[in-house]
Length: 137
Image 1 (cartoon, helix red, strand yellow):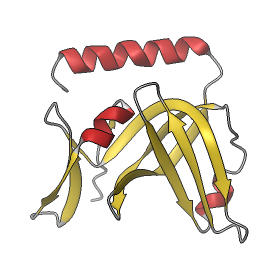
Image 2: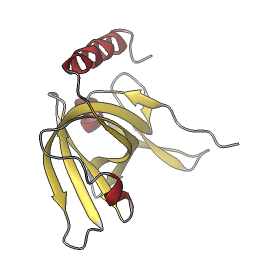
Image 3: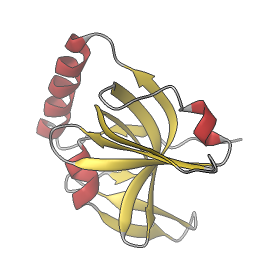
Image 4: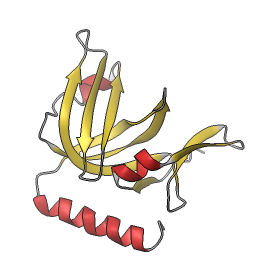
């Protein structure tokens, strides 16, 4: 049976300050953040501040800012087409796998949804404050 990792709601700053560790039993790595959570998949909400698409269309990235820090969402190959309708200035809710390459922490997105209601941003900030106050549970 396939077991999916939980997508933890986090601030981008938490991801950028996390430490990469390896879990020998699963032969996979995860990002350990300050509150002790082991992050393999995450959920962030922020504004696209940069959009890049390679000339051949096989690579794209968005830089997303949530007010705490900025992280890149990287897409490769066929994944690029799934996310081409997003633009600079869009507020997005993102679920994806946290990755690291050459010292850079980034997200490989699985789902990106445009957020239309500004109250949703306010709600996420409250959720993150509650999570932070509980120590990451």
